[in-house]
Structures are given as C-alpha cells and as structure tokens.
Image (cartoon, rainbow, N blue to C red; front, top):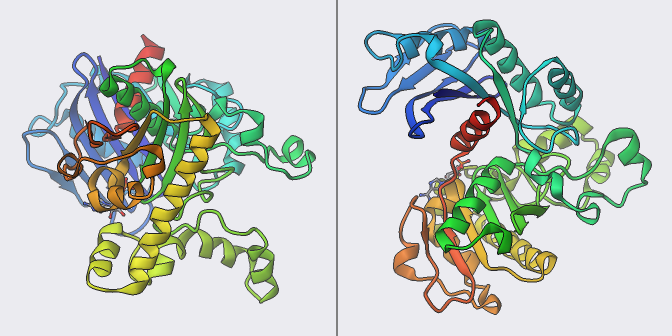
Length: 396
Ligand code: AMP
C-alpha cells in the first residue's frame, strides 16, 4: 500500500511517496516559489538522477499536477498509475483543541481546520489548499490530516493555561498548544526502543533543534510540557525567532513608534540567532563565524545552548526526574559541539557524554557514556514516516 505524504507551506510543497509494506521511500521532492516567479519542482527517486521542473506553478494544484505526472512518468516515475496511491497524509500545523489525534478528512474536519486558521495564519490556510487540491486530483483517495499540535493535547491545565484573565481562553482559545508534535512523538517512541524499555515507564525530554526549535517533556509516553505556545514563536531562541521575551517589550517598542506588524515581523523573522549574530539564521554559518572569533556569533550560540539547558532543567522538575534526553532535527542530529555545550552543564543529572559516540552524525544511537545516570541519544526525526504510519492506520 502506497501513501503519499504532503506538506504544504505558503509557497512550497514537500512530498514523499512511501511503500508502507516496507516503509521504503519510493520518491520524494520539493516544489518552491509556488505563485511567484521562478517556480521549480525537484523530484528524486532512490537510485535515479534528480529531475528538475522549472515552469510556472501559479497554485499548489499546478505543483501537485506536476508531481503526480512525475510519479507516473515512464522514464523517472515510480508507479504505473495514480491508482497505486492508496491514501494521502497531510501535515497539518494547527488542530487547536478539536483534534488530539490524526483524523480522516471530511467536510466537518475541513470546517474545523478553517476555524483553526486564525491560530496559525501562516500555515493552516496553506495546508487547506493542499488538502483541497489533492481532493480534486484524487477524488476517491482517502485523506488524513496529521496535526503538529495533537501530541500536546495531553498537557495538564497548569502547563497549557496562561495566567491571563480566564475569558481570554474561553473567548479566543488563547492557551499553549505546542508544535513539532509529530517529531516529538516519533523520536520518543524510537528512544524507548533504543533504551530497550517501555515508553509507559519512561521520563524523556525531546530536543527538536532545527531552524524552528522546541523541547518536549514526555512522561509515560504523553506530552506533559513543551516550549512553543499559542504560536511557534514561543520558547527557545531559533533561527530567526526570538522565543520567550518579556511581553512588555512589545508595547514598549510600539511606544517607540514601531507598528504592531513591524514588531511581529521583528520577533518572527529578524531575531533569534540571525538577530543576535547579525550573520545568518543558519547554525552552520554561525558556528563557522564563532569558530573564527566572531563574538556576536558566539553569543548567539551561547544564548541558544543556555536556553536549551535551563529548559531541560525545568522539564526535569516538571516530571520529577528524567531517564533519557533526545537530540533531533538539523542541529540536534548533526552538531556534536552543540550537544556537548548543552550537556556540559548537566552534570547534576549525572550526564556524561561518550566523546566518540557524540562525534557521530545523523544516526540513531546512544551518545552518553556507560556510567551516565541519564541516557542521552541522537534520533533522526522522520515526520513523513510518522504521518504515513498514522495515515495507514486510519484508512486500513
Ligand atoms: P531543520 O530545520 O531541522 O532542517 O534544521 C536546520 C538547521 O540545522 C540549520 O540552521 C542548519 O544550519 C542546522 N544544521 C544542519 N546540519 C548542521 C551541522 N552539521 N552543524 C550545525 N548545524 C547544522
């Protein structure tokens, strides 16, 4: 059974076609600059050369048309007909309080997603466009929505409620939702396997450290705390996002003449590692500059490592202990120096890294020393596989 996984951004579309009998990726690709000049779709299948389609794609539906033609193309295709796609799984960012698990898409689900769009104005409308376009092109194929927020619906009230007047929650649904749930769920399940223990008996902290970054405390398999909030702006310092700051900074900047929109753009797109270093939002560039002696680049990294560390400390308190810490996503999987810098100050947890194991990249493995009291692991995340698994289980 083949499952197509679709991840629509406002001007991009990522996809993977997986054969779920083996969980093998048959083909994958990325369309960028949809709706603007210079649209391009790059399609690849294992063992074959990449194929690049440089042609106008005014809408996500046009990009989907190109990718579906690529999937069945006699020379670089991987299936004979679109009938070989049994289901489509859609990465969907915000499910609000309506969805605590993945769901088969129907009219009621679409209506709920429209209602959640206010909470994720950059993401949910794009996800909906992808769902609608797929429904038009594959009208008989079941679609499943897999939510970034769903895994965190187990947060207790004291973790998800903000201490604002209670009516802000009842009127506007202002609360912590959390994101990266598909990734945190996937790596925590893999970590339990690596530790040879049941997830129901473990206290884990998952550190998803990429361009967007969040931490999650997972107690007995359930998310009980996470660092992103109503939106993905909260929590850690990120590539371009500021994470947690004193909320009074916003009205202060407005009093200095910035518009609310300008402050919003500043916090989302001009802050974080980019804003502090003045160099780049990409951790590789910033690590390179710091190694070359650039002090602001070093400060940007120090803030990042410090914030991850103190958040780990807070989550140990939230769970009254920790058995395992997981590093995942671009930086978490690849930067041994960042993992070392974060763990160096976690000796109070009895954490000791094995320098040889920690020098590995992108492989699922334990990187703590044998006598470390807490197990530290690198687990490559695989959100597409998680989406495909959820999709399969719902349509089977
Ligand atoms: P993601 O959002 O998960 O794709 O992660 C992207 C981030 O991971 C970018 O800031 C990259 O610079 C960072 N990253 C990827 N590989 C490395 C590496 N080898 N060392 C440091 N950072 C890396």
